[in-house]
Amino acid sequence: MDELEKLRQDKMNNLMSPKVKIDVSDANFDNEVLEQSKKVPVVVDFWAPWCMPCLMLAPIMEKLAKEYNGKFILAKLNVDENMYNSQRFGISGIPAVKMFKDGNVVDEFVGALPEPSVREWLDKNL
Image (cartoon, rainbow, N blue to C red; front, side, top):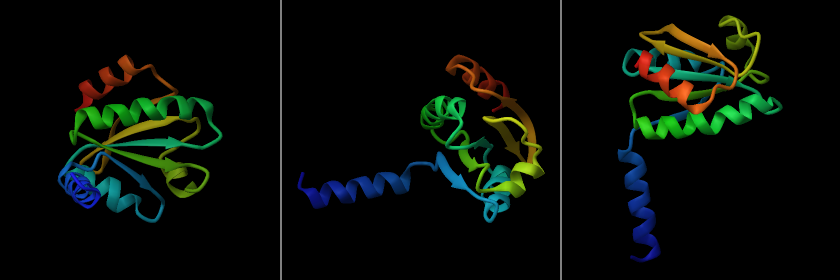
């Protein structure tokens, strides 16, 4: 397969695969999280780049988002850059993870949980 064909195939795969991870901000939160959660659950990871537990949790969340293949969308919100929604949803400790369905928070956890605990939390709420 030549390079151009490989790029075309990769592009098609990305277009056809479900959206599993997005970065959100105060500007697009309502549309990307609240509105999307009316179609598919959206799990928001409230994090910051200086937060070591956040950096430990991130690869677990991303791995599970890919593994669950569209059963939920993982949305990442940097609390340092997006104070409005951090305050709006009462974020006082990070990482904070909230699941939204039909525009509302249905469950949440705070702290870096191990993968089996995150998986159990997802399975309980999806």
